[in-house]
Image 1: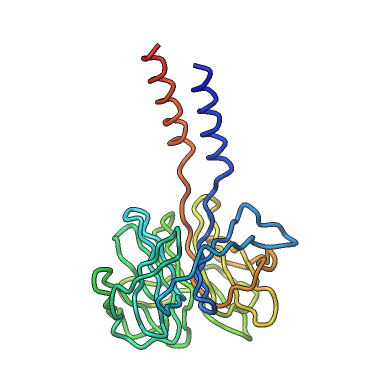
Image 2: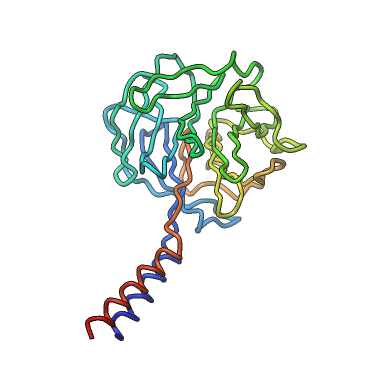
Length: 270
C-alpha cells in the first residue's frame, strides 16, 4: 500500500511540474522548438529548447496542433507544402502541395469542425489528406495575417496582422467569408513581425512571438478579448519568424484517476 501511495504522489507531482510547452517552428533554422511558458518571467521571457530539425530541407512558418488526431501540421512557404511534423523529434514529411503561392502563412486547427485553416493575404481551408488549399472569400484586403489561432472558448478564429512600423492588432476571421473584424477596442500597442500566435485556454490569453531582427525576439501575452499586449521579455534564444501552437497538458484529474486506479488494484491484490 505504501508503494502505491508513493506512486500516486509521484504521478501528481509530475502533473504539476510537467506542463507541456508551446511549440514553435523557426523558419530561419528549420528547427522545431518548445517554449516553456511555466518559465516565463518578466526579465527573461520564454525559455526556448530546440526539439530537432524538420529535415528534408523543410522550414515551417505556420504551426497547428490537432489534439484529437495527435497531429502537428506545418506549412513550408518556400515550397508551398503542407507538412506533418513529429512533435517529439521535429522530423517532418510532406503531405502534399498547397496549390497556392504564399509569401508567409499562419495555421490553426478548428476543433469545432475539424478543419485546418491557413492565413496569408487571405483565408484558406486545407485538406489534411492531400495538402490542397482552397481560398475562402476574396482576400483580406489591406492586412496580411501571419499568425493564426483558434479560440475554442469563444469559437473564434483569430489572427494577428504583420507590421514593422504601425501597431499590429488581433482580428477575428469569418470562417465562411474570410472577412476581418477587429478584436477589442484597441491595437496590441506594438508592431509584430513574423508572428506566431497561440491561444492558451488554461489562462485565456494569446501568446505572441515577434521576430525582431538583431535582438532577442519579443514574447508577448495579450487578452483573449483583444487589446494591448504585454511584453513578457525576450526569448532565451533568437527564433526567427515562425509558427506557434499550444499543446494541452494532461489534466490533473486524469492523473489522479490513474493513481486511484493503482490504489484500487493494490487493494485487490492484498
